[in-house]
Image (cartoon, rainbow, N blue to C red; front, side):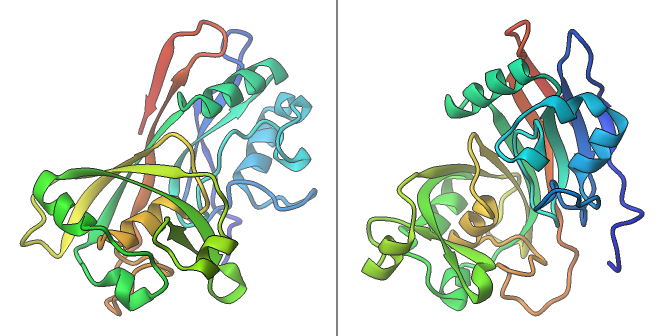
Length: 251
């Protein structure tokens, strides 16, 4: 993709007094947020141009306003941006309490040796066979940056080496992974993943760790076969910051 000028967000939920947040759909190739003030080719800038009230919200970074979570540039899907400070603080607390649930779907490659080919992953702990057998597993790890310019990440567990443990954070992140069909004889398989808190590349790295990298992932799919990277944040659930009722948005 040569540029992001033609990539535009879609508005799923407009902000109002009763709904002090925005839900948008970000296309693949468009960054979620600016890295610094003044950057315009991102979803947050586009949302702020349409709804200037979000600029009044002070978030984790000044230039992100009320953005509550990110998705990778290559990933398409739903983002939530608070349009009032009270809504931001309330939804941020929900995230800390694991009540802000994001669900993704992907087309994954059935390739058990992925963590060996990519290198520097901790022992797999039988995840690949467990997923084939049960169709649903939960994996948990800390993370550390990895590779040239730290472009990738690697899961870190208690069985990782001393060097990996020194480079990782202590916080643990969990991904629930579900195969949407029997994968034993399939090369490409649809997968659904659910997280309550996210780390950069969390789902992509966890899927590679268990032997089901997202097909076409430029960082975590070791196959040389060219396929479209298909990864979407298609559902998000949280408790309404005003009414307290659980709400869900689905693509």
